[in-house]
Figure (cartoon, rainbow, N blue to C red):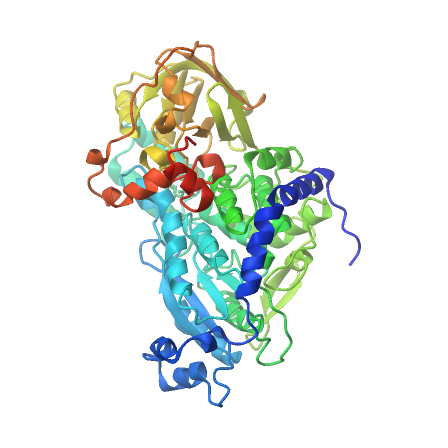
Amino acid sequence: MSEQRIHPTVAAVTERIARRSAATRSAYLERIRAAASEKPARGQLGCANFAHGFAACSPSEKLGLRGTGPQGPVKPNVAIVSSYNDMLSAHQPLRTYPEQLKAAVAAAGGVAQFAGGVPAMCDGITQGRAGMELSLFSRDVVAMAAAVALAHDMFDGALMLGVCDKIVPGLVIGALSFGHLPTIFVPAGPMSSGLPNKEKARVRQRFAEGKVSREELLDAEAGAYHGIGTCTFYGTANTNQLVMEVLGLHLPGASFVHPDQPLRKALTDEAGRRVAATTSLGDPTSLVRDYTPIGEVLDEKAWVNAVVALLATGGSTNHTLHLVAMAAAAGITLTWDDFAELSTAVPLLTRMYPNGPADINHFHAAGGTAFLIGTLLDGGLLNEDVRTVAGDGLARYRREPQLTDDGSIVWVDGPTESLDLDVLRPYDKPFAPDGGLRMLHGDLGRAVIKVSAVDPSHHVVRAPARVFDGQADFLAAFERDELNHDLIAVLRYQGPRANGMPELHKLIPALGVLQDRGHHVALVTDGRLSGASGKIPAAIHCTPEAAVGGPIALIRNGDIVTVDAVAGTLTTEADLSGRRPEGAAPTDAEWVGTGRELFTALRAGVGPADLGAGVFGAVATAAFDGASA
Ligand SMILES: O=C(O)[C@H](O)[C@@H](O)[C@H](O)[C@H](O)COP(=O)(O)O
Ligand code: SF4
């Protein structure tokens, strides 16, 4: 393999992360290497434990699991962990996957068991509602549920079925707790394109202005979200798929093939075959040992590749939390400074809604992941020398899957030219010199801003603050027509410790109306936005959050605040010295309903946004110990 050219910034950040993570990474690798075994894991169980593990299986499955000879079990047993439910259009197709995967693994000489289900919240359904205050925590609940499934210790490999926002990051975190297992992520693919996202957003703004009826709004929404598969905007779910591909946890080109295409079925079958072939037991059909534990795949080079892919595509801001939390589960410490530094070197190569009118299907048709990964490799912006579930080296992800006449799957060279330069560009002819995801700092703390969907005339907004303790307060003020001026909307007590850090995406249509009226508006919050949020300059994930005394709680109505995405600053002209925090997070007594009262311990133990807003490990311990974030 020719020596790959690597951009000096990518090399420097990779090296810095490796150095910073050396102790935790080596402790992690030592743990997973100790857990690895060249014999089927279930063979180490006591007889009673083991008998429970196959009691309910069919006779043929029992034979496969128990083994026939005196030496006991020999076949690899693969865990299937699924987030299927009917609530997420993206997860509904997963309903049939477990039986399909069991057959595929059996055909490859292994056995497979449905090890457990994990919950999946649809952020589209809960957007703007109380349920959204469980959403970020659901990532870590998914991780714990995946661990419960894998903790049966019956398994030599795993297949993770999930697509959307918090589910895929949660499945990665859970899988990394069993990092000795080869693990392949199995997606279901996008919805076909319906009402264009831009038209959907236009109808929403007109509804916010009272110019269309609720019936017309519902018709537009139902035209956009019309069938099975992942919603077609480039939000967190589709960012997840791209990140899984670049991390090497999907089969090459698996992300954006539709659920109802024959190629999707072949890709799912191949995932079952491949995971059975890469356990520590060796490939049952060829006895070639190609052991590929997930914990070894996800090293610092892989995580840098994931950040580069996020930046190059203007992906979801939620990944400034999820990538940090996932990497930590592999013993790797990612920081927002890493994102910021990589952002100076990584150009914006795609324009998908909210960063443009195109959707994920247009991206796929324009060359998709094969072209994107290829051009990023050509530009020296990705580490090529990584391990993947498909084998060593990221160059194999320049290829894309095709069906042969007999229904099997082959990989062929993907496009080396973009098929639509309005959607997908080569690294040397980008839409913008950087990915538009920037870090802000200043006397209001640290924050994240994504400007790839914001008109340059709004990259710097200086205006008087108007402070709100919740979305409803803001929307009520908008309805009373009190906000018709330049405005910095400050939404405080929306951080992880306060109320679970909800997405505040419902504010965007109203802020969009104000912006379209010619006002300079921006949002400042310790909460989140949706990956589908665009157009409004928003300093989000403000850290420290208001609930731990962060400076965002010191802002008063009328203070002049400046959100400056060019200089990378978040500042106020008010003198904050001597001020005391105003307002307060909801009290536990107010946490009734929608299950929020069940998440008290997670709110108490969650760490800060710039450490991934997770409830695991040292971060949470510090939080429980009352150390301020
Ligand atoms: O981070 C994300 O991508 C969002 O949470 C996304 O999953 C959610 O579904 C959006 O809210 C949908 O967009 P609309 O609410 O505009 O339909
Ligand atoms: S992309 Fe968002 S709205 Fe669509 S199914 Fe997934 S979570 Fe729900």
